[in-house]
Image 1 (spheres, helix red, strand yellow):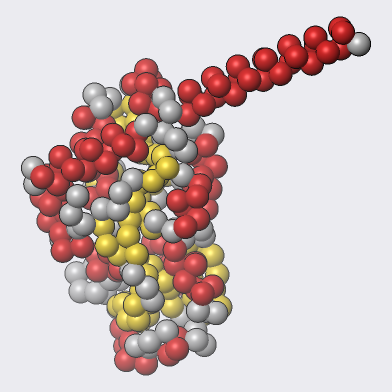
Image 2 (cartoon, one colour):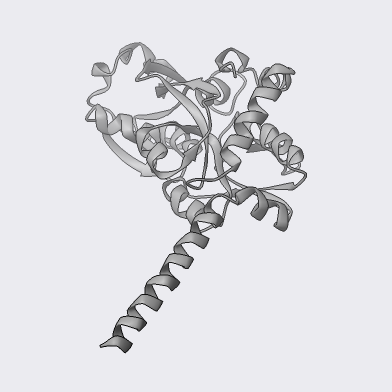
Length: 261
């Protein structure tokens, strides 16, 4: 009996040490990132936040700001396209170090990640063909439409909240293709993407946004208890005060939606 008791006590001590070490790992993300020399940022193709230029380089408000943040940490930055529905799994598995892609700060997101202070105002809006826009000014007007939404997105949440019929696709850019081709009647995407990717001078000149379904804010997500969250909040304050955030936002025509830090 004494031997069994001793073994049990030893096992408890080992587990206690393991849990304690695990907790330390959770709050040492900055050291982890510094040691590997790069910050891995999980994104999707989402103009004007993250998208590729003619040379295949990632640009956009979030991409440019992530580069500046990585520079402040004295590390490189690497952008990895992820399935948005799997963002928490990718983060927890350390395939990425943060989710930085116009991410809406929902209760679900806040419960699953350590999130930064909000830095951008946004909304979910309905996208339809321009010649039909007058028919769909409110959510009620859209009840009988078939929607395309990004899997795991705030757009999907709004489709469910309004009782819309919807099909999930891989990203927001694909929802626009679905509407343009007529596969879906409408899409729900971020307002910031809508003003950047639809209307005159864009690849979706025949599409426009109509009903505004909600109001929301963007934030960046790290692993639970990550010390990088506070480092980013401090960086936001500095970058807002010295004009860096506003300058980048003006580059992409979205400065009016920036939240003061």
